[in-house]
Image (cartoon, rainbow, N blue to C red; front, side):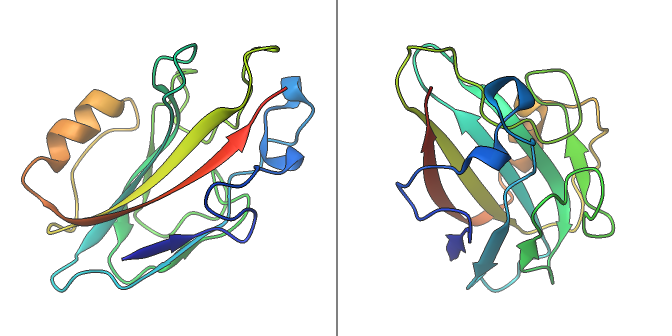
Length: 155
């Protein structure tokens, strides 16, 4: 399975308008496209997590129940143009939405790991109040494949 973004190449820098307003951006969710899902994929889930030691696996975006026929999320889709049935889950800010990078100043470039999971079920039946631990538990035994890209941002 392949995952790409028109905003940055894997290992590249995340452009300014995808970061939080506090870091000078517009907080637009990243445009993402994927292909090559394994046979039997009925839905997708998505996570964007910052594993930097200062960030302690800060969750920037979680989405479950993306339809199996979907092949992309448009720029700025969070809260507006999500595929029908997709459910945004709670990020580390406590909101069921995309929250762009906003690393503490002087901590260097942070990695933002974007992972798309191909799942064997159509729905995980999670509420928007669910977070990363609940998503991981719900996906257990249902992951057919995954693809990852990493973008960097620092200030």
